[in-house]
Length: 293
Image (cartoon, rainbow, N blue to C red; front, side, top):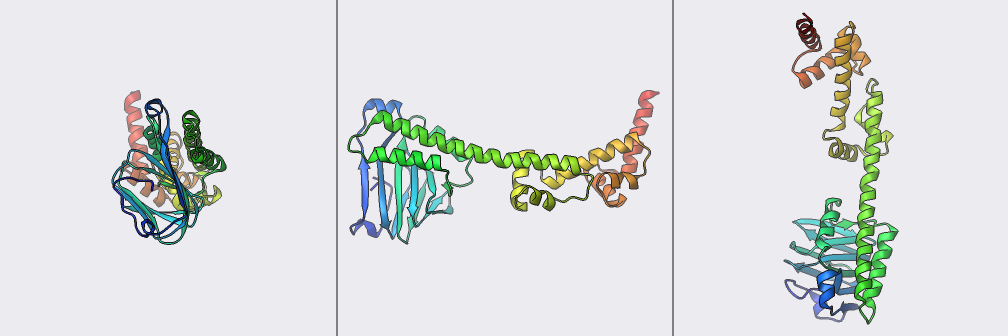
């Protein structure tokens, strides 16, 4: 099996299973300078399956090909359905199991830079399960696995294949990170261009093809504030200019800046600045008069 210590297994240790394990001997050069894989394997329709570890110096990659795997990391349970890839930094306590038949391929990746790659990947992942990896990452993993199935271990080829897989996966996550960021930037631009209209966060989220929850979460991550606060900032900035450089009434300014009533503008001003629009206008004009005298 693919862990030699700190693990418990259940029924499959006591009955024949459709499993294969690939164990490779490595040169000192490979261990010191390359990405390498000492252990890999594949399980076909195994059930009542469970692995628990406290620590292992590897990045474990599991590709679920059939069934469903449950993963526990940091006290959180996650489900890995068929077609998903699981990434586990085995230096942290973890476990994974399946009570129903599951098929999977697993690879323990090691090497000088593997945990640096793991950190880059982890920063871009909400959980350790990637449910719908793109074709390039899957092809790269299968290419790596094909090398590990061979009788003769090609150290340099395996290292290149590991690098290709990790690189493809990282680029995929970066692309996914960029795509919602691009949507959020367009949503922010829409708010800046339409704050004077009667728009809501729900409207903006729907217009840009996002759920309200996802929109609020991603907007806050990118701009440091929720979208409704960003909308208020635009409206208050507009109101400040009109209060300073026009003689319009507070009621007219409120409507120009997207508020239905003067009371709504007054409430927003009090919350943001601690004074009413009229008090703000008087204060600024008094300061300007003092400065110019």
